[in-house]
Image (spheres, rainbow, N blue to C red):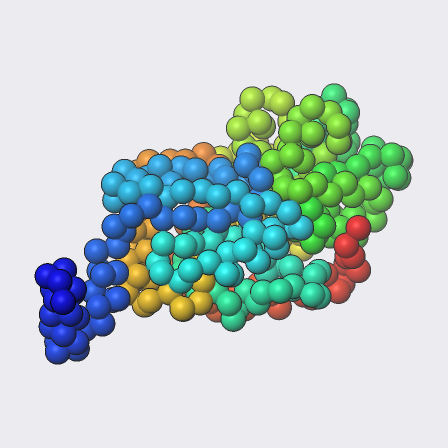
Length: 327
């Protein structure tokens, strides 16, 4: 028996005698190496608007990298499927979104279960949806003029989304249902590509999260006509809310959350949650979140799990009422 093996055996015996699992003991020093986080959408979308600053703040706090791996496709379900099979060692994370609460109703043959194959860690950000248009393609000075144009020209205009079954898609379908308009849906492989085509003029409008649209609204490349919900957003006080323009029941938010694969040790879960909460409540990220029109609900793991269950049920009802189908 060599000296290294003898030391390892003695360390294991000491930990066992103390009633402490060597794995949990190792996790107490988390992170001791870079952490991988799958983001299930292409770079440049709403998830990236929060994932990238979070990655930078995490590295600043811990001295270890939070590596973002963008795996887009099928409304975020491709990346979720890959994430469900990651090693549950505390160094594999998944940053999903509201789309993943919608997916069970839109994709009947998913090879993962959001509530059984993942451990919910924390809700990172909550962002209202916003109706944005390319001002060169939709010549409307405000929402009132916009809706008049839509009703006069059914089928002439289109809207881009992050993919069939995403919140962008269903926000558009709900809008059409409640306003009795017809706008053609153009699905993309993520919000980033859809947003770029909106800016370039390849599509007319989007129902997007403020996180990805805010910089382009402020830069004048796209025009915001309405934010969902019953109150205006502090980051865009001049943009009316849905209730103000006659849509009191039009409330759609894009939220982003963090999960770990099932089997991740509880000690590692606790360390991850603590570091993420510390990051999101830092002065740097609070400013970025506010600039993107987002807030941090600061849920416990139990509250986040309950929230996911309620969102899955809510979106199932919305899909059924809207008659939404995969294109």
